[in-house]
Length: 153
Image 1 (spheres, rainbow, N blue to C red):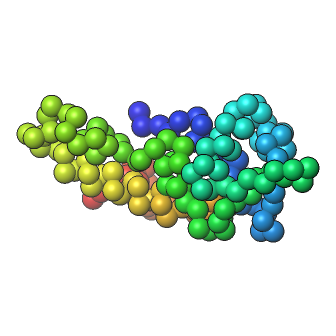
Image 2: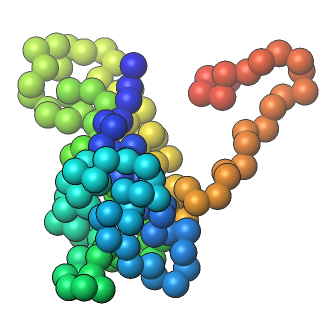
Image 3: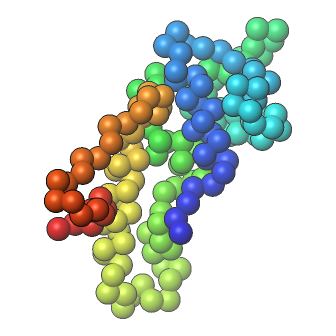
């Protein structure tokens, strides 16, 4: 199973709290923790990483808190995954070329690179702004059969 980390899932949830407000909302870690119903230590840890990675700006003081470093339509899901989980890679040969013993003779290696690139592009085309509202559902064929949306004809 391919699954992003809980930290990244929560990070996207926290960032959408900012993205949903077009006025450039500033929130404290405690406010975000309460809004998202997440533990404060986890929220604080995620906010520090997102600030270090340039997705959030941090302001100290009595009216301090965090706010988005860019507009919500300029931050993608891929940006958030990269900030919290590191470079996007579905297989070892994509992530760390040379680490796999099968790499030189692997017949599916180029396919994994294509799949990795395709999934990354999809994540890079969905912004925080998009995440604040429902995405359009995929079209369902009228044939009566359930179709696998990932299967290429």
